[in-house]
Length: 233
Image 1 (cartoon, one colour):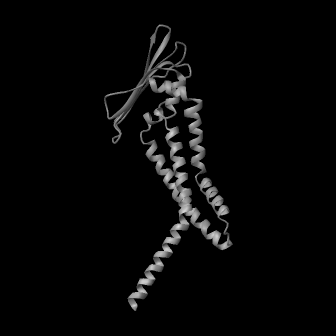
Image 2: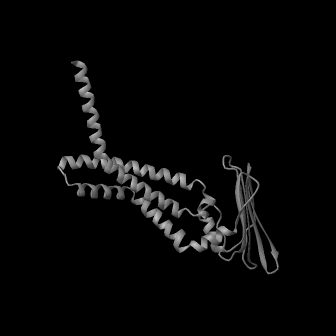
Image 3: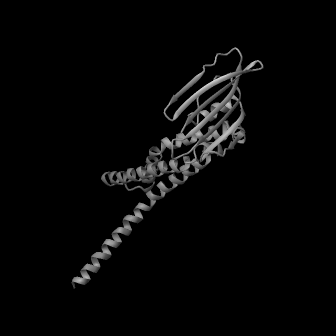
């Protein structure tokens, strides 16, 4: 008799879990759709130029998406409690509120990704493809790239994605060579560009332990050829 009661109790618990799972499916589905849409936006805005200078951008951003998805699921759990407390039974109303809550929870990512998508794939698509075509890999340390004959606009686009130093708007024929280890702090950065001969250029010769920074220039025709270099061993 006791065995029958235990079996009946087990079946009741199992059925209860099935009912809870069935009721939760629609909320899980909303969270899953949100995750898929955000992942698609991430894949769209992270173009080749972005990946060249940040190869971890997609894994890192996907972890953000997962975090916001978990937050939305927690929020929907509280929303279900609210539905019960207010005795809200209308399925359409519950789904709309759950979808709105999910969107609001992830609104930061939607705005951020949408802005980047428009900038990278609509407004500046050809410009960024033009820059990407000029960038080549370099053999030295574990990672690195180089580019020649950059315009000041192209260099600023690259610099905004990195820590590269700012240079005068008058700079032309810009070349950079950047190599870095990845795990160790070792890196080397060389920047060469031309300025009008009348522009002042500061000479730099600085060393601090394993770090050194130098800047020099020479007169080439009617222009100044500036060479800037940073090295960390």
